[in-house]
Structure formats: C-alpha cells, structure tokens
Length: 308
Image (cartoon, rainbow, N blue to C red; front, side, top):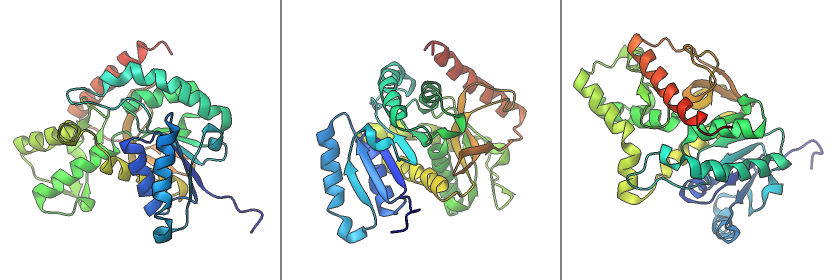
C-alpha cells in the first residue's frame, strides 16, 4: 500500500432514524472508505453496523464498524444526529434545553480526540446546536456546519417543480434563515433558467406553507423524517470530501450578512474541503430582509438564554 495513502473516514454520532439512514446512504454512494457508528446505546450501533456489513458483498468498498469516540481521531467529518427527536406537536425549539445538555458531553468527547476535522450538525434545533457546537468545540467556525435549510430548500424546489411540471433539479430557489418556523422563501430570486416562476401571491403562500410544515406532516404520519435529510447530509459530505466548491444552503456563522452577525442561520454558502469557504451575498428585497432579521432575532433570543 502507498505509505502516503490516508483513508477517508466519516463518523456518525447517533444511530436513530436520521443517523442510520444517513449511514446507509453514504454506504451506498461510496462517499468514504471508513464509516464509524457511535451511540450511547452501543448495542444498537453494533446491530446497525452488522446489518450494513452483511450488504458489503453487494456494494463493497467501505470498512464499517460500531466504535467509540476514540475513532473520531482520524475522521474527516463527524456528523452529529444524536439527541431527542421531534414528536408530533413539538417545534424544533422545544427540543433545545434537552439537546444542549446532550451536546455538552458529545462535543467534549469528539474534540478530545479530533482537532482538525469538520463537524456537521443535524440534530434540532440545528441552527442553535451548530452555534453551541462552535462555542463548545473552540474550532474555526468554517469547520462547524449545520444542515441548515438545505432540506427546506429541497422541499421548496420539489413543490415548485410539482406545480410547474418541471424537474426540481432545474428549479433555482432557496429557503433561508432558521431551519424552523421563522424560515423564509427568497421568492425575489427564484427562477428556472433565469426565467421568473410567475406564481401569484396565493400560489406562493400555498407552496411556502407546505414547505415549512412538511416535517410536521411527515412526523404526524410516520414518527420521524429520515430519507430526505439523509440525502441532504450526503450532499454536504460529498461537497466536502470531493472539494466541490458547491453552493448549498447550510447553517453557518454570520458576520455582517445583511447586517446580521453572531448567529448561525441557513444561507447559500460555498462548501469545499475546508468546510464553509464563504457565504454568497444575497440581494434580498426589503420584505425578505425584514423577515430574515426576525428569524435571526428569534434564534439570538434563544441563544442568550443558554449563557454559553
């Protein structure tokens, strides 16, 4: 073996619905050469790893095991999906205090063994927990990323595509702000190949409300979301490991972004091997600026209660 060869390693902390679906997605797409599952319930992680290992004769190419935090030492990316999950009737903010307590232990354990990787946070409320992870880790904010509004933007594009009868991959539109109830659609920039979408106000409201409430609908129907968020996390992992410089609506630390600083929010950002390289300067209209400021203020108020 080439002595300079270094395997790519992804660690997933949390083997609930999101963590295991993400692991399976990464496995099928051969995103890395090593995949480690960590869970406070080690037996659960063992079972998930064993089940996936039995499929390796069909896909190959990945070494996969249930491990401990010491396995974070050589990880390129550590994905955190652990924490209390959203129940029917709960908002993402309702999970905050419980999950902050869990994260204090998780981030301490990760940073004990890893100083140079990238933290990818998926646990809700994802924007605040990304900010908490940045504070607790002491890492450069470029290397602490939340899944942000990438999934919301995908839902938005899907619904627009359904209305227009166009493949959602050809829709250019973004949801920004909180991954939650104060998120907002950037209708002023939404287009297909540079062509405005042509929706009236009622159509816009209908599409956005269905976008914003999608998670509640899924949770009410089946208990949790898993498939689409796994694909969103896979997309971020791909952008990082392949150094793509892809534009993705992830949650990152804002610094004078439309006048807003010191809060994590989902905005279109360039993602490469370094993490979030930079944010795009979105020319929002006046209404969008006001809604974005409201989203930031909401999350800042919650962060201030944490006394970090």
